[in-house]
Image 1 (cartoon, rainbow, N blue to C red):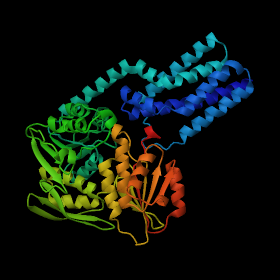
Image 2 (spheres, rainbow, N blue to C red):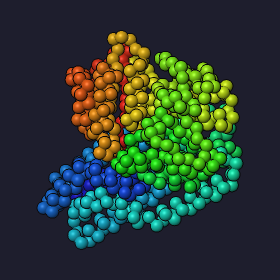
Image 3 (cartoon, rainbow, N blue to C red):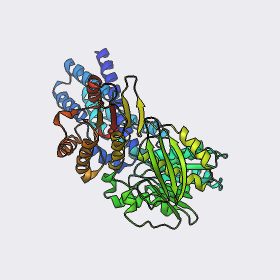
Length: 521
């Protein structure tokens, strides 16, 4: 009996860790914002976990002494733990000090629940059942308990970062924001400015206030001359909060698009939030904005700083890419800067979106007196960023266009342009693999239907992954009279990959357009 107790408790410990880790990870991905986490929780409650809790609670009342119940529950807990451990996370959990404190508090709360229950009803399986029932809220309760401490720690970190910045008055701070394209623009700008300056940029997706604070405290050094700050947002005021900390003198707005509509509620709110960066610039600062973006060009821009515009299609842009030529290995273009034509810019990057991002970087490089020869040299050496319209070829002769990171309607159109014009043998097929868009609120179904129509004009085979947007995308494909036999439905990327492995042939081109964020798996 003691061995069974030990095995049962071990299984529960494994189950507890995987469940709490997942909840903490989702909380972390929602920027530790309770309202965002609760919004996700309401929409994506874990049914297997709830079913396990319900069955355990009911059976435990009648069969708590039966060994078969202990064994069955142990197997179920381990199976659920394995299912969670097998999930491939796009953004793995980062075990920061805050996360470690959350785990510790959650463990203490769970232990207290088990002890109180066991003292009230001295039955181990009923006590464990009570602990399992508490799991869906244990992370939130732990966060509530830790909140005063976390607020104090965050305030100290924030003030320390502010003090460090104030000690570097000559540091040039450049903010980069936009519905999409900001991470790529940040990387390209970093590479070009590094030809002349000692540059630091916020790493990875450290684009929240806390991420910027951490970058300043851990990585900013006295020798740095330029600090490039990526600024992300999911609600009004997020960009202003970062600007109040760093006070940029140059700001880039890469695009305004229909992303995170569930939290912003309207495109106008998105636009207003992105332009919080321009609003924060000093009168002698410079705002760099993409007027190819329809939600930017469609409305006058209020600004007190100098404004520089860029684009590919908009002829009114101060910086415009012209004479664009795509080949299998590189893209070349000239830059028209108000009639001043600079020739022969070359990059290994593909797509109109990447050209726009490079134009923004060139505009800033000009402001900071980086010679054109150094700009061109850096641009030729820029490496593709994984999952952001990167192109690679397999040993079997298949080309892969990887645009799997955080897809959006405008970015998807650009990716489909690349697919449609990709050089390939006449017998090769163009294939799109996508689960569609998420976090678009009431517009989600319509925009995914439009995606289906766009896919029909660029692809020969469409693989629709997951059920979230399946109906909308397939309706769009059918609206465009896409061949029904060329529409493949897959419940997961693993299933889609298994199908592709059996049908691919040399010369085929695959576009991976978005993978669902972990929150939606």
